[in-house]
Length: 344
Image 1: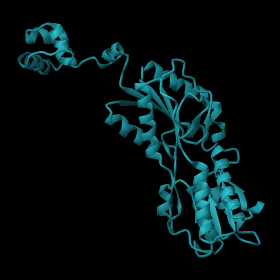
Image 2 (image 1 turned 90 degrees about the horizontal axis):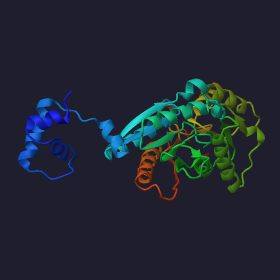
Image 3 (image 1 turned 120 degrees about the vertical axis):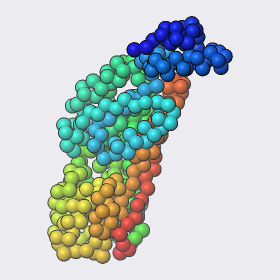
Image 4 (image 1 turned 180 degrees about the vertical axis):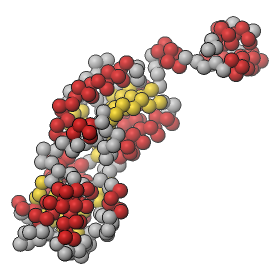
């Protein structure tokens, strides 16, 4: 492997001059620069980027620690992070914790796996990354993440317990309020809810948004209209089937994610009813199934890519100025209205 000394010998200049040219730290004549660059081409010289980065105490590498790359929001968030960082001349070191295999959908059990998170943080520390973005797959408050050397850090899709660390997430509660309000504005008064895990922070926020919208419209929600599922398709079928047994059926159902909403489709059709003629259905997340199912589903679209873009920009700002005040960003979601809803 060629060295700077080899280049200097071939170009007939000093090692210091080669350094000036390669690092652009001092002016040299165009004739000298041309000789040095010709020698670089002839020797196929490759600079030791890692050594240079360590000398400058800056690697231009950002660590992205993800709970699971297969988690619903994660790919979009990482895409946004990557787009921002590559445009700014940074590279990405991605570490996938693969929590879906360990947890499936039992997100309330995530605190038992913090050792894996902290192993990932140590890997980032050893790689001398300039900063870390922690990407959650479930919107919640996170505690127990260790950062002994205080690497600049930002959370995406979650809120850290440490108030000194900024975060970017979405407005869960208001989004549930908006989708419920859509049903109310369409004339629905009997609206049922198929919720996720009762212990889930996300489910509780969406429940709060749903109840606020119903309260603001002076609408009563019978206890039997609140059904607790587990975020999966079979629970959507099961919980909606229970709703179909009631003497007074709801005219609309808000399922807390598109997967359970698809299960509601099955239960409604199994009972000989039509969507949206007999019952309107809305979901949450705007997954692929929402526009592939028949009829296409009205749902809430999360700003996943924008979360990634904002998180990356926030981190780069903190790397440039570590004294910046903590800035947290809560992004709005948008309603995607399709054919699963109709005026009552």
